[in-house]
Image 1 (cartoon, helix red, strand yellow):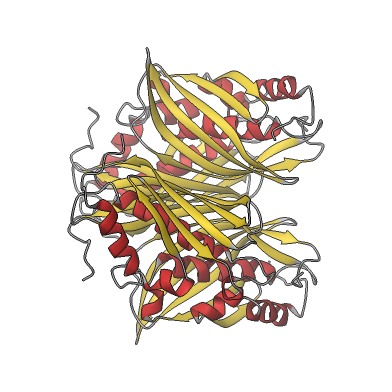
Image 2 (cartoon, helix red, strand yellow; image 1 turned 120 degrees about the horizontal axis):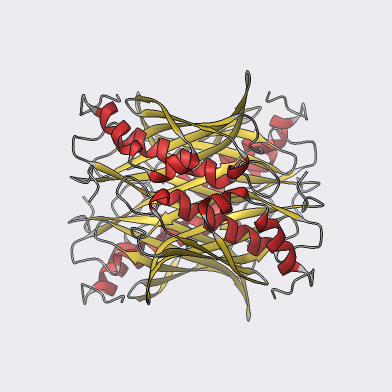
Length: 148
Length: 148
Length: 148
Length: 148
């Protein structure tokens, strides 16, 4: 079902991710790019915290958004760019540990719109806690792969 | 309608905001704290961008979340902390300009749950563009104002 | 801002509403159609209730969806149809009274996608309670006005 | 993980479902009640349609909401009632066929709040199409099982 239209999809996603200054500011790393599934890791540090010392929900939302967006892009045609239409996050547990891990997945890929989901886990040693889940919509931007 | 239960609400919100390492990392500033309405400003710079050079949706979501959360907290009793239950953002336009401005508002304040909205604007000179709108739920955490 | 592209927009919306068997089953009435703003009324009766005797959230969601969708359609070109992409509802208070009233509004109208909001009120005599608020996305379906 | 606190959970859910006048109006049937998973079926007929003849998104949302809410209730203590806080639906495909089937699941069960998901399928003979997915929050209402 999730056959990529572009055999070069992983390189395109990696190149685009490298252009996101915000992912660099956060310290996020692109872990893996499979057709319709993208994983991002974010080592936790005090600069990512909210007022109680846990990771800010914005950090979780941001890597979930990028993981889900690039999962959508991995199935798009060469040259197509991706834009977030909307995304909702539900927080499941306080996020603490060594790192956050976001797994973005394509739920349904359409010509214009792609419905995506992402799950975020807080990880420490061999423990993984499901801390957030998201549901959103991505839009295909024909010919918008390259920054303007 | 939005009568604060704590006359000291603004100082509490400012103190909590200052403890959010993530807002400091982003460079966000707390502009104003009124009962049920909180405003945050975020000067834009390349470190906040996505792959096309616009502000990353995660930056918009993050200040919208903090503005909405603190709008909720501004109506809570002394000692109460706030936690995001869920929040959805719809992106309305690409975010470019000198800064983002998020205005969070309480839609309905309950004992446990507060329904909140936030709008995000991209501003440049005397031009303001509505770039995102959010709808979410905040939870009252009795006795959780202070970080653990 | 909300200038209709089709001077005949109100008649088109009314015709389409009359084709929604579901609105008839619910007993919903189209109250008013302005450019970008549509109002629907739903007299309450036991058949619309959930287990505690209040109106089922599904009744509120349904008229909010139709009001918001037709608000979007009111700004579309002749022949264009409307389809719901996604919509989120937050319930603010139990819905009881003589009727529900949904007011759908266009937040931002794009070529393909329209961001919409709707508010739902429970009304009784001269009392109106804000019971729900929604935020969603509608899609323009070129040439899909008429049922297939 | 999903161990019911009340061995009588299925009977409680069935009794509450039978009190939802709205489910009766729609013609929905409670198919199965497992701990944390509830399934509802809705035979399609013209009275459930939108303007293009497909099932109205409100019908899908409504059975998804009831399935998800009762999935949450199936894990609650005796006497506890359930209330929808918020729920978002993304429509994946036009809903046509003999019936809709909603499967509601508990994603995370907390003391006050339960995060839930539901998927809706349109079915015809041996064909099943995934037409909608939802993500929402349910609230535990202590002692509110019985209608007031």
